[in-house]
Length: 121
Image (tube, rainbow, N blue to C red):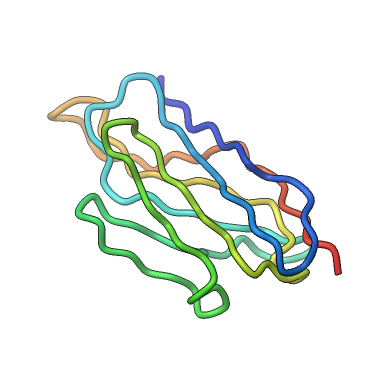
């Protein structure tokens, strides 16, 4: 059984910062790419940032220069540092990870339960 648990969401004023964390636990042999997605009310879930096992990162245009994704492979944890937050960043943020549970297992994509980020104007 694999779990991804997010933390760090909350309410912040525009221009403020938050740091999200997502820790993987359970039967994890290896984690390939890890990513953050978000879903605002009435909108589809969209990718925010992604980081490979080697540390290569990609960002949505809307967050470039403001958000930073990092990971700690020893802790099976991915982080999202969010600076200069805007009201349009308000959403539920979800962690995603491509995980193998054994050396020979297929890689599956797992999701966390989500954490709410609300940015007030």
